[in-house]
Image (cartoon, rainbow, N blue to C red; front, top):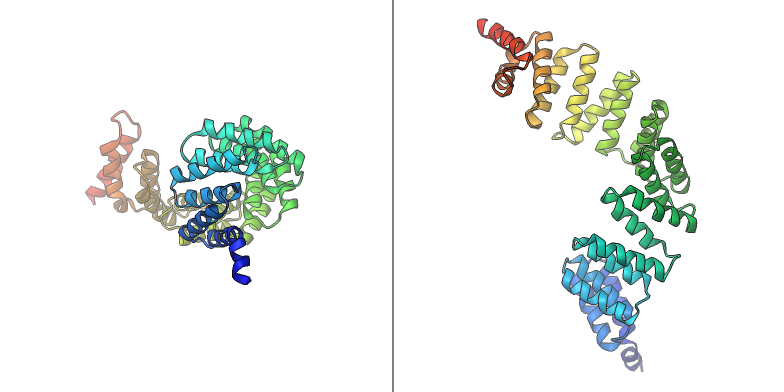
Length: 333
């Protein structure tokens, strides 16, 4: 009796198995299970849709497309399947096809927010902010407290120089979900843009609390603390960024600027030299490094940098004469 019952429900058995394997990251096993399920019930669009997802996850886009298209053939008005095929088209480098399919998904189910969000993300990645904005606003008509949509609207308004409005959207997003570090980070950046540095620090500090090893957060906090004159806190965040990301050049440059500001030229020079070693040749930074070495009475430590500057600079560069003089001073000792 039990075996007969199972045979009658093989489609559900293999479908459920496929979903479990898909969720566990066992994509080949998921594909096998969905194909078994299809043999039992070849007219169930869910089976082809999930088969398409599995093929997409192993980057077999041709088979994924075939599965999605079969699902749509069976159920042409399924918004979720249309949205999945749109996402695949985007992965295949066909944004125009993706946009048409996302719009079809929206028409099939105007209250399903996922295609609105997906097409908005697509336009934002393409820097088509004015095209993305109506879709995000439509999501907020359907779900007024959707944190991701509020965040995207904040990003759009910030990039399009509406920073005051962006601050409000990020604040609303945080009211809906106060556990995402990126929301506080985005709020901090928007507050920084409008010159509200103290509140920007508070927002970034909260973001840091939620994600203490994020490079951008540490670097931004270092910059902000330097700008408001709290040099000890600025040093803490710059050195923490260096500890976790020693191959990123920017904390070295930022802390060098801090040391220059407080006239600690030895430390400034050490960090400028490290920065210069990590980036392509930058004539302005090279000259600054030489100048700081002079102020630290360490011109001999930048002989190589001075020679590089003279080799790469234009003969009409007004700094050439100065660097030649510095180099001559070193050689005469």
